Amino acid sequence: MQLTLERAEEFARMPLAYLRQEYPNHIMHVLNDAGDVLSPRAMHPVFYGCYDWHSAVHGFWLLLRCVRRYPELPARPDIEAIFDEHFTPELMERETDYFRVGGRASFERPYGFGWILALDQELAQSTLPRAASWRAAMQPLTLEIRRRLLEYLSKLSYPIRVGTHYNTAFALALSLDQARHVKDVELEQVILASAQRYYGKDTDYPAHYEPGGDEYISGALTEALLMSKVLSAQAFAAWFDQYLPRMAEIEQIMQPALVSDPTNPKIAHLDGLNLSRAWCLKTVLRHLPAGHAARSAIEAAIQRHIAASIDQVVGSHYSGGHWLASFAMLALED
Image (cartoon, rainbow, N blue to C red; front, side, top):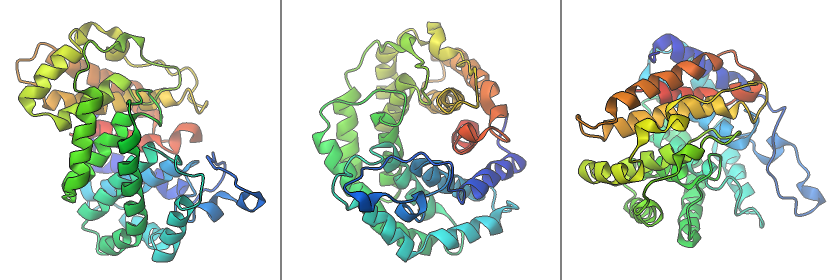
């Protein structure tokens, strides 16, 4: 259950197919008048595939991540071609225009916000010859999303802890990584302050109520992931021991979720939950001291969660196939 060149190639081939697949499509769209009745590609000329907008965004993220890990990836020419096709100034300006229409302040907030910033980070890190021009083309959208995130955090009095798209900690974790990479001190400081305000005093989190039947991220573990990035190693270990004091005993998060029907779009979320839990647990483990009492239990849980869902990624039904590879990538990375 390791990330390999062959597995990265399999992962990359999925968004390469689905990023150009317009239908079926799940649209989250406010209609202001009859003129807003549009096809997915008319609304989103870049991110129209992969069933929904945010999945298209992290589909492009996955392509860059795969080729950054494996520059010799056979899919590399196809990856460069799809970026050349989609990441143009004109198309990105039209993507940004969608956000400028009244009534769309909540569109893709905050999940899509986090993935746009993560995609910007991958573009900044990429060594592909035209990555800088692709990133420049996306800058209007990146800056619009950054502005919206800052505004959102200034008004969000309480964190949203659900295991789906509205989860606050997930978006903040991705956004914090990007802010640090591009040295955006203002955004970094706002995220750090927000995370402390939302989660710094949390204790004895009720993780035994997880999972919900349509969740693809763990509210408990995603918060721990974020705080591992916010706090020093010593401070995080102390916080974590108060936050999940009996973690090894909480079977509901230490054991993988059962996926009864991988063809059902909501139930298929649970495969993503298993993979995203593995990613969170790996990150938490890196920030705990060597002698921590829960280390061996966490290590075993990581392997169980990956084993439960990794075979559901490649060749899976479109309900999971349009997005699962991104979470599999996170789960398998060291």
